[in-house]
Image (cartoon, rainbow, N blue to C red; front, side):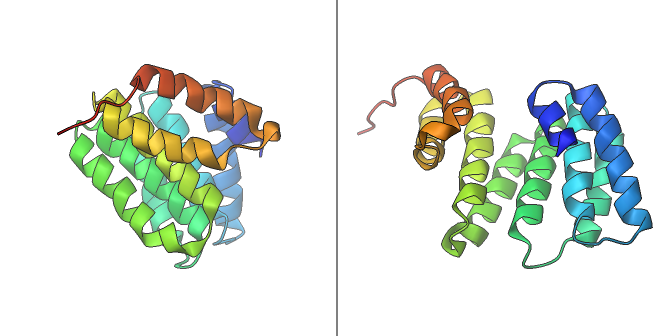
Length: 171
C-alpha cells in the first residue's frame, strides 16, 4: 500500500494525502473491511504532522467500521489510538490500549500482528523512559523478524534495542 510505504519512509504529508483519499473512496463505496485500516493509517499520518483533531476524526471512522474478527484492522486502529493518547499526554492510557489489544489477540496465532503490537508498545515504553520494559517487548518483536528477508525490520528494532540498552536485573 502506497500510503503505508510513504509513512514508513518518513513522508507523513504525502502519506496523509494518499491515505485520506483512499479512506474517502472506501467510505463512499461502503467497503467496510477497508475503512478501519485506511482511516487508522491516515490518523497516524495526521498525528505525525501534529493534527490531533483530524486524527480523532479518522479514528472515529475506523472504530465505527471495525469488524470484530479482523485482527489487522483492530491492531492498526489500536496503535493509532495509543499514539493519539500519548500525543494527548496520557501514556498510561496509551499503554493500556496496546496491552489490552495484545492480550486480546495473543492466542490468535497472528504472529505479525502480535509483533507489530509489541513493537508499538516497546516504542511507547522507550519514549517514556521505561527501558527495561521496552527491551522486553522489543526483543519479543525482534524474535518474529528473524528471517534474513526482514532486514529492514531487524535494523529498525535493533536500533530501538540499542537505545533501550541492556536490561538490568531487579532483585
